[in-house]
Amino acid sequence: MSSKSKEDRSQLLSGLMVRKSVASAAPTPNPAADKDRVKPASITSMGASIRELGALGRAAQHAETGGAVIEIAPSDLDSSLVRDRIDAAIDPNFDSLVASIGASGQQVPILVRRHPITAGRFQIAYGHRRARAAEKLGIKVKAIVRALTDAELVIAQGKENLERRDLSFIEKAMFARRLEEQGFERSTIIAALSTDKSDLSRYISLAKEFDSALLDAIGPAPKAGRSRWQSLAKAIAEEGARALVQTTIDGDAFQGLDSDGRFALVLRAVSAKVASAKPVSELAARSFKFDQAVVVQRDDGRTIIIVDEVANPCFGDFLAERLREIYAEFLKSEKKEAPATAAV
Image 1 (tube, rainbow, N blue to C red):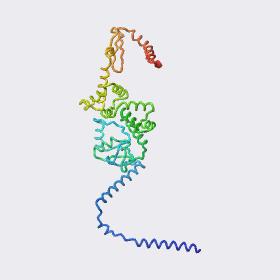
Image 2 (image 1 turned 30 degrees about the vertical axis):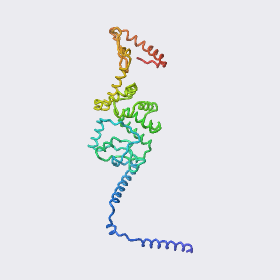
Image 3 (image 1 turned 45 degrees about the horizontal axis):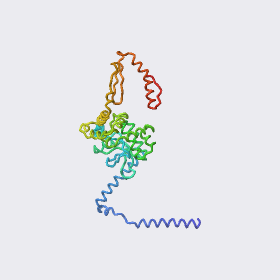
Image 4 (image 1 turned 90 degrees about the horizontal axis):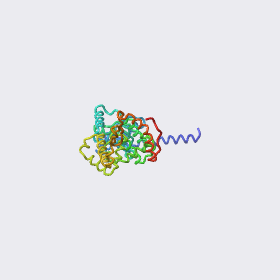
């Protein structure tokens, strides 16, 4: 054996002896003494809280990677970045959801992410109503935790609502408006609503016609589609209409209605005002007759021409033939191009 190998072996044995002597010099634990030592209550409570938070954190981490379902206290949940619903004062569907979860438990977990700012809290992507129901019942919420960017969160939120088909037209429009106001790119908003550029522009444009206070008072109005909301937007743009809307909202009749009933009441109130504001000459021409053979009926949004083919059997055909010509002349006067003719 070389002298260098002997030297290395000597140093190795020396190191082992030093570590052994240090270990033997360490004080021997005294379990009896530790048992007699009383821990302060604050430390005990803090330790329990840390252990609880640690357990929740480990469960959330496992859920993020494996899609496992965990239970979270409603008090540890925060709403999504962007509000997607308009709460209704009278909401039978929510009451039914509370009753269902109370009887059968929460069958479908909500989706959350760890709160990007506040440690120990979670932010809901979708499932706000289930979380509210659990809070009302005093139980924990079943949730899947997933690592999501802001864009991924709102896209998941939008797609879930569309798949469940439970957002009304005005809720979708306001969701699009709020996403834009929050600075999200149009591509993200289009993905969240599963729509196209032109439709998205119409959503946002119409949503900007209404203030949040009015929509919160009316609610989601699930039976009202785009055309009825357009009619309401046009009506409330008239002078004095907004004051009439406020008077309607403050009335007892409004308070006792569900969301669709509230929408209909407001629309009738402002539409009646617009009709009463029209010139007398226009109102006089709303309905009239020609020699008993032709009746013209006009009301808000439509004109109906009724031909009595018994009294004058040829006039209906004559009118149908001339209608294309009359309409083309009208479009020309409006400086528009007449569309291609189609079979009547």
